[in-house]
Image (cartoon, rainbow, N blue to C red):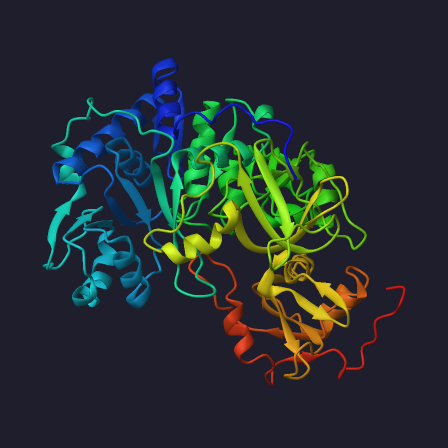
Length: 539
């Protein structure tokens, strides 16, 4: 669906915005961490150039890739900025990477320099003989490290001897601003090349930026290897606002962080959705709330608290090409699915069949995108020409997701193509099932999969949800199913429910459903039909 017109070209890079703010309003706070450390825009720019000088002093060159492994912090942001100012590129990896995953990331990037916390050095040593390109390691803290087979530097010593580099030019928008790894749910993780212009466009589309101000406090819980750690500092720089950094995502600490630091913009803490009149919720400054989709359970607390909610469709390879045209833009189809908005100016979306032929409004197919703004979509997968060619077949980026457009151009995400469930003629989104199940106050995490009745092609599939309870809960399969009846379409109510202490996760914390499908039914699986629970037609 073509857009009416394109917006202005995104500002060149986050660094150009940072430099402009540092010149125009040098004392305004750009970043704060949960422990109280903060830097102004001018201080941030100065320290970023110091990091650039430190990396240059050990031989890091423009266009070089440096792999990092660290928690989300002011120093992690400064390191990213510094590499960008130098013309190099950061490739942050998951702090849980080890063994084969760590080897894959380092060898794929061909990085000769890695910067990591001292606690992760033993993992490097365990695979040292398999690392083909690594030549030097920068230890980001002062922790004692064992003798290494590579040259070793201590970041604090490098920084102490470095003067901020004043001779460096800002990177152009088409230069690669970051390399981020995909989840690897269908094979080895791919390293996505994100141009600076893409990061800028992503920040512009993460909220209705024209309605935000320099007074916002934006929550940035990371992690460093997720697009949010690049998007939220950029959004703050675009606004001249402040963003708050947390070392890692902690559901338990979100509400505390919001109250202590006056966060205005972020996701809604789960307990505030369930109890919108709780004293903490009432006292908070939160007003701009990002949601993955407008689940009906979000509407009552939104109305009670006066929150402005926004939803967008995005992935690492994109830049929020779809989003709400206004705050609280609720639109549901006849099955109760929420739209994630309309296509942003400058982007085009198609819904296509397996031969890339466009499908009519209302018909589900693969979601593909392109843009008439240069460099706002990914620049392919690093050192993976065949997956890059397949993803960009025909000049459109193929998401691997299923969705549709209605006859007025509203966009609906259905599911990953491989995760759709076909039950008695109905196409069921595992995403929709999971959202409904996780609305239960005693479900902390859920993953929905299909259980086939037999191995014949086209065999009927039943819905199974694998769940993790909240702490102290004794919820069982029957209790969950009875709670869901009447809250979701009857054909979506799971037949099977299984509770576990944990679910397998990808490096980006998505449920790894390929593992759940290996043993679809176990002795712990609750069967709604075997239990004799009927779903009323009017339920």
